Image (cartoon, rainbow, N blue to C red; front, top):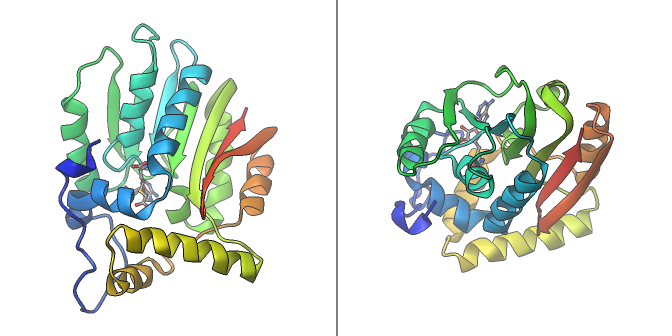
Length: 246
Ligand code: GEK
């Protein structure tokens, strides 16, 4: 997904009353630019997810992209699978605006591996016969009390040998560590052209919408959900990706 083809993210550039962040049409229009300028390591996490899918997909199984936005993960997974794998990719998001644009990206490429787009809540979407499930920066938007039941459902929907790839923004219990790493993220956003006003207004909009956990909370929850092995495989500042094995 080429960020240079999307509109520039200036959603928080002007001083005005900021409501809670929503994945609406205005966000969908600038999303590739927004995520590239806000999430350090995003492209590496996508590529690594593709490499993990290349290794752990099972012929004739399903691969899921939960909280797919414009379908960047689904398209990356597909590029990494052998064309004759007999797999299906299911990409789920509960934002109709996001899925409308995802449809355009998916239709722009031809492949024998189908990508099915579903406008559903990830807390309810059925997960069956999966070899790979990717949740890239989506669990952080799910209410904390719903996170363990969702992970347990993913675990139950994975075939033995299947994997969950979970990418999240995290925080640190140690205030010194939190301040140091948060500073690096702020510098990343400043270097990518976001103003102090944009940074502070977006932070206000995401308050109580994007709720982070610590790495330890993620590892404990994955174990509770039934994943016998889990490890971080990538970290860029306060953004991390884990792989968990069924
Ligand atoms: C990427 N994975 O480009 N059910 C379904 N979708 C949801 C839910 C829910 N309960 N809550 C949030 N979403 C993408 C990036 S963005 C991350 C994912 C971000 C959707 C929401 O509509 C949005 O499209 C996505 O999760 C989160 O790798 O914006 O930081």
